Length: 269
Image (cartoon, rainbow, N blue to C red):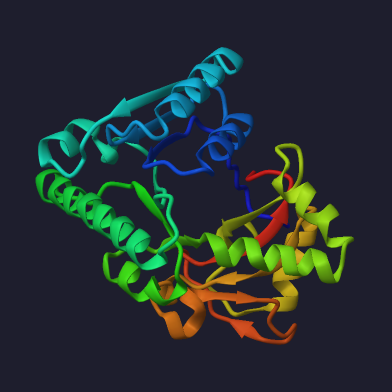
């Protein structure tokens, strides 16, 4: 039997710091996906380059998705007072977009500088309130060689955008049918990849379980188990940050309550 476990769709909040040519697509995709009442805030420096594009995109989303709170703030978050007014700790997710440009090193240098400013502010909030904010910070990186610098800031989630896109293109070029899978994954109505707690699958998650048992437990929920995420290794680059995809069926794991199964599912419930 499956444990009594319920995950329901709550309102979400996103702070998107910075802007690049992918910004319009990101906002539209999020707007199609997130629940009613959710918040999306775009924060940019006062630059003229993307001003009209951002203004038009925000106006379009406000008109098309009145159930969402979409806003745009122009602010210099390098100033501590402006960062405090922006309040990244009030959001569930903070996403730092890389700037446009042709030099990955200079682009990543700017991204990491912004990342350090956000982390410094969140540390100050932690000291003030006595516990760390639950905010998750995600940073877009252009060069995989800079991952170690990102990890040193304490950020565990990052996207190497060029590498991600090039791998998808390579897979589709080799096997065109793969595009149907990506179309399903990237559409709001399709299945998605979730990291769900092992407590959702086992009555006694702390006893040893084989990967075959993990797959069977996922199938009982009409899901497909793709792998596992071991929490204690999330900062270990050599262990792929705790992510293990498609291990041997007979490999046995001793989970903790903070470990997760990586599953393909229709929703996060």
